[in-house]
Image (cartoon, helix red, strand yellow):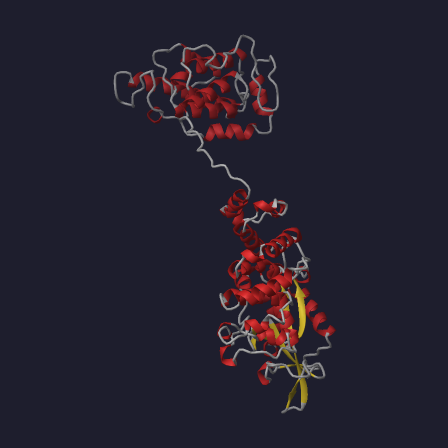
Length: 532
């Protein structure tokens, strides 16, 4: 509630005789030229004076009405004298003259004249080679005039005067600034009371925090760690799913929370269906983390046996997460590959990860590739990738005809860069060779025979390992990246990883070419005239 204007204590105290005014960083002294010395000696004074000089002249028509009876220019009998006083203030040659024009013409002074006077004071102090002396009493009297009349100012005039007073170096805790600031606060509309927030307890608090848009966009690992210590009764399936999705989305490999999710899954096994389980298992595969919970795998096998025919897509997602962990449950596959289920799943991973499996299989015509193109994260962050500069380095080092970029090899795995290499280590033109190894892999996994040239060929795949291919704040490859590299190796391709730390340490293309040359020569590869 606003206090009445006549009530004692509703105004900032007026300065008493002998009061001093301090500029920024320096107290006032009794010297009559103290304000001038502060403004001209302080490092920030030039900027402040520039602000005063660049501030546009204050127009009376933009300041709004006041109890002094302001009228627009040209209107009313007092328009001429009002405008005349403004011109006199703008042309004043000293601070004393400014004060004299304000004090001797009380019937002509309007609210907008005070910011005009303050602005002119700043011009006098900063624009002349030898500024006029400033008497202490002049500053005190000018301040008292403004303090006495500021209750009649409108909000715009108060803002302008406050801004000019700060630029002139009046102290922030002085009488003038405090009075203007108090009037400014009086003009502000009252703030509405904050709405009552519902009381959240336990899992509701966790759910609200994890559902916040800011939290979803910006991973906060310290908060995630604290959530791992929540009481068991606070953890509901929905809260645990939100935590699991957040970990997977932001690549947060937090062991304590992952173990808490695994323990929750084991304890709540009977109450969870496969659609919830697939979301709880997702971060384990994506973050390449096998929990220490001993009942984790037996629990998932029982869930797969129970739910395989109920939600085929959820079952496939669970199997993919387990495949990334290299933990495909051998016994559970007999439940999964049943006649009623088999049309929903691709079993390339089963063929590579479990070569001894002899149960039902998916027909070839129904199989789909797992990684037929660059991963979504690679496409989204292509401008940060090293692929373009590595491609240019290989082009200058080997020639365009001796490598293939982004080639998808059977049964559907995208490679970064692929080279065809003879048994002697020579890098051969890709266009003259079959770049694909036979699938399924044969007994001799790393080579194929070229009947035309009667020699064995091998395939070398250069795999970029970008920063986002790893878990955040760790050196563990994400499950999808590790799975692709592992399967390419199982199919017979020789892998040459290029970690981002090594790529980022190369300064320019010449250093990168030297780095690639060393990497390829370490594998015994040759190219150019000596390589054939």
